Image 1 (cartoon, rainbow, N blue to C red):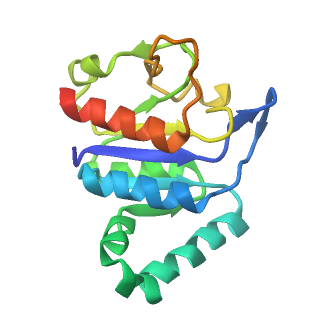
Image 2: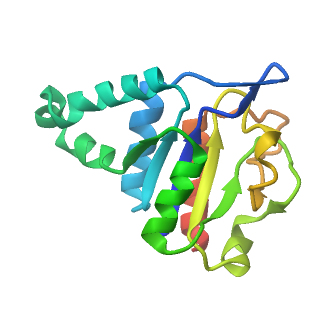
Amino acid sequence: MERVYIALLHYPVRQGGRTISSSITNLDIHDLARLAATYGLGAYYLVHPDEGMRGLATEFLSHWFEGAGRLFKPDRTRALEKLIIVKTLDEAIADIKQREGERPYLLATSAALRPKTVTLENIGKLTKKPLLLLFGTADGISEELDDIIDGYAEPIDPGNGYNHLSVRSAASIFIDRLHRVK
């Protein structure tokens, strides 16, 4: 799973029928970093265009790398070492390209069925490239990225008519399912 990367997009995401930039939450920072560390992922990219939001996330991390958090929960610090804060998705892609020598396959997630849907079981058959799994905040990833996205993962659908997981829950389910088929 070291060639699998995740990115949490805060822009461009949709809410109320328009493209917005959503806020960073510390739960997303912690939980997705712990997910990346638990499954041995290559990295976790926190993508936000706003310098103030990125600065807030960096300040939050200082507690775990330089403050009391380092002594209080060293395993949390270890997990947060997987986190890379970037301004754009392009920066995350460039970082993976530098690490891996090639552009990653971009697999986006959505609660709705989208064009270019790919089952997790078929990912390995489609590409031997590194994989960047994209998660969107708010109401999900904007269609503005459809041209660069290589595929969309099948939505998580338990079949009961309700499909509105937190991004942290959805990421955990997708990564565990991917781990089981890899």
